[in-house]
Amino acid sequence: MSQFDVHRNTGKHRDSIPYVVVVQSGLFDDYKRRVVVPLVRASVVGKIADPRFNPTFKIGNTAVVLHPLETVSVAIENLGKSAGSLAGEADRIIGAMDQLLTRV
Image (cartoon, rainbow, N blue to C red; front, side, top):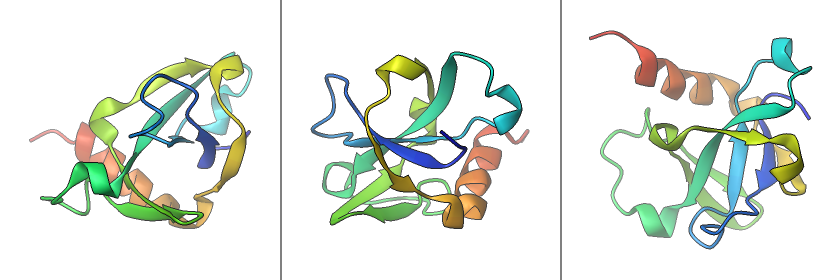
């Protein structure tokens, strides 16, 4: 699994958060966990105040919103099946994560 790979969410909130995206750098591939950001159904999120912080993507036929404030570390064996990649959207994802970590 690579940075920006999308996986199905196998957790209890999978109805509202059908996917997660791996944001962890490949430098840490030897670890048995991955840092992921939830991709929440756009229909659940409603109005987005800052689309740079919460960019919207389409996974299959599902519109999802990146939710950096819900970033978590997940054991590899708890990640669901691969559902594609958002590598082509890397700049938008990194921009959102940068915004989360930027000093004000």
